[in-house]
Length: 366
Image (tube, helix red, strand yellow):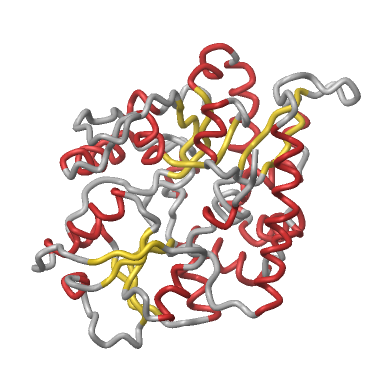
């Protein structure tokens, strides 16, 4: 399997200096090699030397705070306690979802929105632990672009897109809700949404507030951003969490339970000890050359904004960490379906709405 991580880096490449950019390139190259080796192995067999069961986990892009619980669980030895040897893989050319669906990886970081899209094409995937409980997506223009002050000003301008019908539907709704027509041009992003905006090839694009938003605050450039929930987009868009194949859930629930138990413990630790978890991520993913101050700032935003759930409710037991937001996800799926954002395996638009309850399970959280 050929690795092309640049396609999946999304907007990570902000206005970093050349040394950081070079480090990212080195990380991508090295991880691609590891991915090539790992994907050729039988991930689910027992390691004869350690006695542990080999399990593979695929990143959704480069290591970030969305992945932090996996790195914490590995560092603290909780995977080993669960009888697992976890091999962390760089994202493949075709994406983490396809890797899990094809059997190239046992688990991955994704979200139910992606699973819904893949399900209309025949994939059989399930999210077994939802980390993020509230949206962090932001849609931004450069602050110095004085022609844009609200989403209606996106009308007639150029959207830096990664080519998804989902993004088109969201932007159209935001513009229309703000009083515009919902018409805009598009340009496909290569490696960096920010660079596309700075070059003048596009006027606005999408980012994640807890990662790229923090990058912009620390390193620049200054952005003017808007959240889709404030402009008529319903439901929960960023249901980020751990996925596996539906057949794995059915045929090997013991493996799924062991992995979920360990990784859940990792995320809970990170939520309660954000600075320590940030140090672990930086240590466990040295090739990414992450700035520990930046990672700590990202975790501070996650904890302060309670993006992974209300901490008081988690502590009291009112909310179980990792629970899937089926209702919020379904509201978003319904919206995308009405907008014609789903296609079948032949690329034709389908209005058969994916069902969040069929794409998720909380059975391994207990």
